[in-house]
Length: 67
Image (cartoon, rainbow, N blue to C red):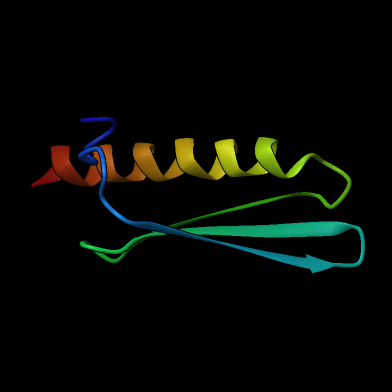
């Protein structure tokens, strides 16, 4: 389990490019937990995806610890 998320659980990732900015959203489907990062549109897609995945794991870990 990584950051409160079991391996193999579905996560949706959405990229929205607005000018020179990219807004990346990750949603953990089973729980509905969401995380968003904003970065430069020129950044590699994999870097932005890793950043939002780490943030999602962090948010899920905090929620798990709070319950």
